[in-house]
Structure formats: structure tokens, C-alpha cells
Amino acid sequence: QISFLDDGPSISVADVTIPALSVDESYLANGSTPDASLTHTSADFSTVFSSVQGADGATIGYALGIASSGVDSHLVDSATGHDVFLFIENNNVVGREGTNSTTAASGNIVFNVSVDASSGSVTLTQDRAVHQGTASNGDTSEGISLNSVANLVTLTATITDADGDHQAATIDLGTQISFLDDGPSISVADVTI
Image 1: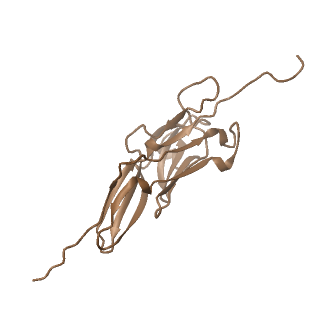
Image 2 (image 1 turned 180 degrees about the horizontal axis):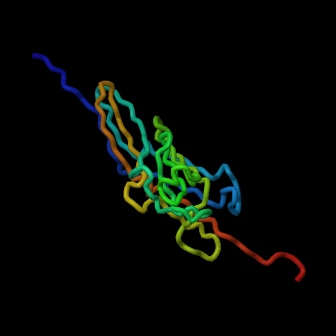
Image 3 (image 1 turned 30 degrees about the vertical axis):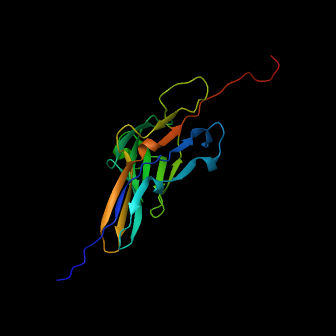
């Protein structure tokens, strides 16, 4: 009797500093210093996971998730005062404003989070301002994150070997995402009084 015992792959969250993604509302079209090229940011999250391929060889795929479809992020869209609800659209996490999850399904996009499924690069793009919840005298760029609920937004890495064995590991991505405030400013103009 001869048998060949399988060797499966493994993956886990590594003991490393997890990258952070932040965008500053100052760069939005109606911000204090508009610059569309700065309304998005990316980071390599593949380094967050530690893996062993096993004897069969393996590949790793990355996917985003949310707590549930239409979940309230507890962010507030500044233009409407509506909450921002989360949806998975084309494998991206999309935050849309609405009076509830039903109206938000077709509401304006506030932000978008995408991941390159093969590289693990995550991109955050902001389209509309949100309330930061703290008033300040002048623009202090205080931030707000998607951390109102544990695992509100997740990133999962799944390793799969040549004969289909697989294992997954997940991080709470929402705690690594922040939107930095843009405050108003006023000064005395250089005119004759």
C-alpha cells in the first residue's frame, strides 16, 4: 500500500504595521485647494499577510467585504446630511448617501474602495465630503474612519493551491481608512476701509 499525503497552503495575518489610507477633503472639487489627482490614495496590503504555498504551489487572491449589504457606515454626507450606506458593486466597496439603505442604493457616491485581486493593492477614492464630528477653529484636518462597527469593511486574502486546497485570512480594513476634514477660512481683505 502506497499513499501520497497532501500538503495544503496556509495564510495568516502577519505581525506587521498595517498600511493606512487617508484622503483630504481639501482636494475635492469644492475643497479649499481642489486637485482631482489627490482625491485618491493606494497602498499595498499584500504585506499584511504571511503565507506558505505548500508542495502543490499556490496563488493568493484578495477581496473586499462589508458587514452586510446596505449597512450604515455612520458617516454623514456633508451636502445632504444623509448617512452613507455601504454596498459591494463590481467587487468594490461603494459608499452612497441616502435617507435609508433603499434610497442610498441609487444615491450619490461618496467614496469607493477597490482592491487589485491579484496584487493586494487597495485604493480609496473620495467624491464627496463627510462630517468629521469635531468642530475646530481653522482647518486642522481632523479625520474620521470606517470604524463605527468592527469589520464594517474587510479585506480577505485567500490562498489556493493547484489541487484546490485553500485557506483565508481577514483584516478589519475600515480602521485603516480615514477622511481628513477641510475647514473654512476667512481673513481681512487687503482693501481700503
